[in-house]
Image (cartoon, rainbow, N blue to C red; front, top):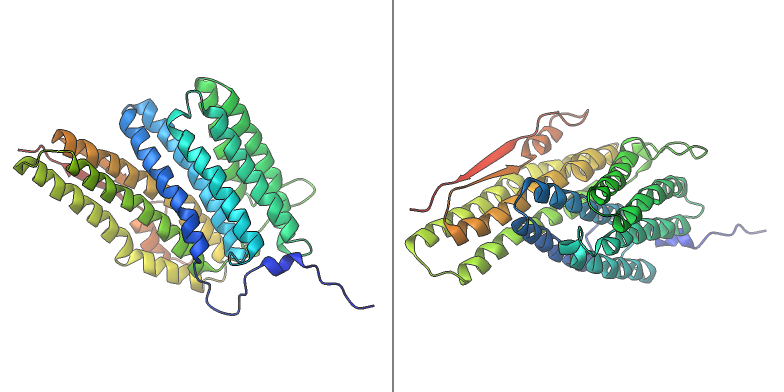
Length: 344
């Protein structure tokens, strides 16, 4: 009897050549351009400690959905129809979630929590089916167990009110972050090793770099859009130049040397899954948060021409250390302080 080959693993990428970022992946990212815009505007409308913490929590939820999908498309071939339809479905749900972000802690919490749960569970179920008979199937069975738990918290948070909503969503984010750290350990199913996560390191690094560009793009859009509505004066022009210089400085800090060096490091690594988890999955959202804070501050600087101090957390030091330290990341994170002086 001839051996039957399961058709599902045919959805995997052909690893024989270079792994490129496909057009559908870039199209998928467009939803997150809108999401980042929503987050920066949320921060502007809620310029308090509580508002900043809420924006940070929403960013974590947005990042986890995008990041988990990026892991998936590193293995699956996005040019295949089934994978394309998966990404389009996730785009639709992400768009609805992004539109709900401004009222996430008001009357649209159920939309945010529900959209989070549907994507985390739906994507993982797709992978379990797509990888039937493949060594990665067990990995996604474990991930599914963790996503079911985190999704329960997300939905419960969407139905709750006040501080309970924030605490439940924090629990959801914590579960999804902790899962990767502990290898998605599940009783009866065991634990995944980072060496099991056979990602194409260069592709994964390029995808995360694209999200940094999305965040930096929000700074550029805010600078230009805000200037359009202002009467041009010497003070406004000075603020415009300083704001633009800040965006350029953040780009330079990340892309001048560190991004390429880190991408090369993960591409050559014998355990790219470990570096993908630490340097990109866990560290990059911190940098994105800092850039979003800068984007929100740019609008305030241009609109008010007042003294603004923006703290942008940049992990350039960590990325640089990736090129020198095979064991992983150091504990230090570079904190860049960009001080916008009063417009005179």
